[in-house]
Image (cartoon, rainbow, N blue to C red; front, top):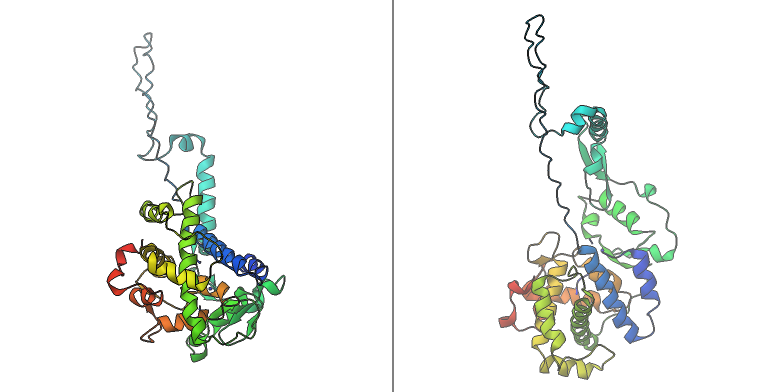
Amino acid sequence: MSSVLTGEAVTLSQTRTQLTSLLVSPAKLKTLKMRVWIVFVLCLAGHAMAAPTEEEPIVEEPIVEEPIMEELVTEEPVVEEEPEVGANPVQIEVGDFDEAIEIVEDIEAENPCLNHHCKKGKVCEVDDSNTPMCVCQDPSTCPAAEGEFEHVCGTDNKTFDSSCHFFATKCALEGTKKGHKLHLDYIGPCKLIEPCMDVELNEFPLRMRDWLKNVLVTLFERDEDNNLLTEKQMLRVKKIYENEKRLQAGEHSLDLLAHDFEKNYNMYIFPVHWQFGQLDQHPVDGYLTHTELSPLRAPLIPMEHCTTRFFEQCDADSDKYIALEEWAACFGIKEQDVDSDLVI
């Protein structure tokens, strides 16, 4: 897998706390990985809000006074003005709501940054014409870290107090060679990461494939409200869940994992495609960048020292992008089974 923190999806403090508690047992490590991804997927789930329908304007019947017979004078009928089409007649009659709306509009006009989004490391400011724009945040304005668990390590092997400090620093280096190479490496203070040996690199995808399959099965079991997986994803995972030959979650030897992959190969095709789709978000273009890989790799590196080398190996043509075909090959998926339609 290649080095890069959804999003756009877990908080650094929560992830660090969970990682620290699982340093001993491989079985607990497997549980942690699953929890990290479940939180990541939950963060991605969104709910659209339906726009309220407009009320039909109420038009009162014209009021016509009876003519005064004694003076034989017929007065003109008195007709109240009709509200403009689309206006709320209650607001027109009361009047107070109009004033409130104008105040809200004035506030928004005075502070256009309220609805202006900036990426990490930048904050919104307005120029002389009151136009919102994103500028690099001053690292000194970042909240102070509450503890070591908020620290992050950059690819320059420098420890930053928090992700806020890191992204603000990276923003200030935009346009420079150093800034182009600087990325978030992993969660936690920088430390010595043991070199990944060839034999360990070959073992890494065995555990990752099994973990991905179990993450999907867990999401399927917990998706009572149908907001963790789409309908198409549910159908795919249901077949895996109901397969009696499925290797149950747990601590298994590498030999057993290798045998299961060979025997139940078809169960692993969709999980590998699914993970690619979860990471390919900014933008959705069929390629994974260093930044898009960050939600997965940043929590894993302190626990899996082959993570960085694995990502680097996936980028077969060394163009800094990992295509679906390269990703699938890293996990042992055959070329004829790579299908972009499975990235759903």
